[in-house]
Length: 330
Ligand code: SF4
Image (tube, rainbow, N blue to C red):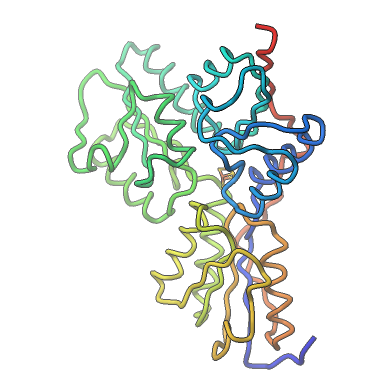
């Protein structure tokens, strides 16, 4: 390891890297692939990280875009992004065995909307579910929610712009969101929606449906950005929605920002001329990658610091077994 240069500092934004939901899906998928030998992964990516996708492929995971590609009687894995009941019905007809690795935080969105439907029925009102999401409606999490609740769902702001929303008599309104959105953007959107529709029930008061992992990583990054780094290294994949949010936050703060897949990509050339390097990582990147980056920065003479925005201990892979739907015998 090289000598520490008093002027050079590497600041890690904690929490960073793999979240409880990705840990759950990845650990259980690895374990069950040992038992199952091979399985069809619906939507291709168990989680949105290329290293993990590759790891599962090497262990027997076969990526398929839709449930229609799952052969009759095969074993299929539902990913951390969840999916609709309609998908499950198709797999039932195919006589598949389905292991469900949906993240509990994604499942919570379904639960809250289902509770809103039940409450609307109880009060004799027409349900109106307002779903705030990013423009990519093909993202697995978004596509699943939209398919499940299509009959009562309005996608905001892509289907109906916020300013065109109106509160109507006889309706029961509920607001929820994609789990990996930008916290500040969602706060602004939901607050305006509540001004227009005061009766709307909001999922989580300060962040709509954004999960705690996304919330914590964005808060941690903002705390590190307050230390005025001159370079930000975000670890994760370009396919990861919450990782892209971290990159956007860095760029919006005017900091030179790089999205890197692995810690090994940290080189002297990359950080040359930068005294304060910030390190963050999306919720799907294995924690080894930002850790390797910190080690490489230390070897290049950077003093290591961590700024912690939250304690994250609520990992659930060891406590919860993924549900199984065995449709093989009709
Ligand atoms: S980012 Fe959030 S919703 Fe996505 S897997 Fe992690 S905990 Fe679950």
